[in-house]
Image (tube, rainbow, N blue to C red; front, side, top):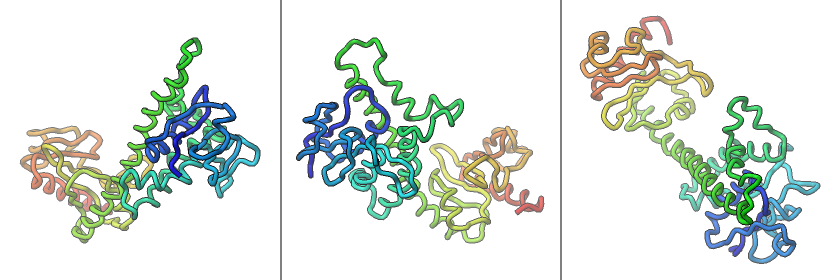
Length: 310
């Protein structure tokens, strides 16, 4: 079915129907969004996809509500919002329309569902409060999108619809940005895996550009790697590898003597021409040339091993 109308409820808006609209408008760009609670609109029929309203969940009739008794649950018992239902049925087609290669569709569909869709589903159903984010709670996506609602004394009859479409544009940026990052990580994984094979038992991984590298290193079981070197626009970067996704502990620090030094001061301490910067936290450094960056990496490896560390 190619719908002519995408129907959701009128009045105040929330993250779930906004994000559902992001998915559906990409798949059906010719369809008009209708925000209404009128029976003639929210009753299933030809040419309509109805979501977050309608009092039923029936994908065969293209109605995706979650407010009714007996609303659908995930396999683990957690509740869906309209966003989760729309993503379940249309997400893979959305990713194909976005341009993902078929081999990546299921991977990104699952990761986006777990890391982006599920939190919205839970928050919309009251199963997860943004306040669990502490001081960051006002900056969570559902809360930020709702700040785009019209203020209470805006008397313009079109205020809600105007706010909805402004918020839809913002929501689209976040969805597309997250998908783009996920797709890029998968592209990077192949590049990093090849670089790991080329490196063999070496301790320094050289990459052709800055890119996400830790997931591929972990997946490959390349526990011997200590540092990564890659070019940037005007120089070369030497960076450490974090031990885990949480926290900032790294496999090996850069030498303590380098901390906070730049240019001539750093060159004098490490003895490498072209060394240009080391962060005071010793997790990243820079050099003017590839040769200098690799020499710094080799020196950092040697100091780490000399200290009897792995």
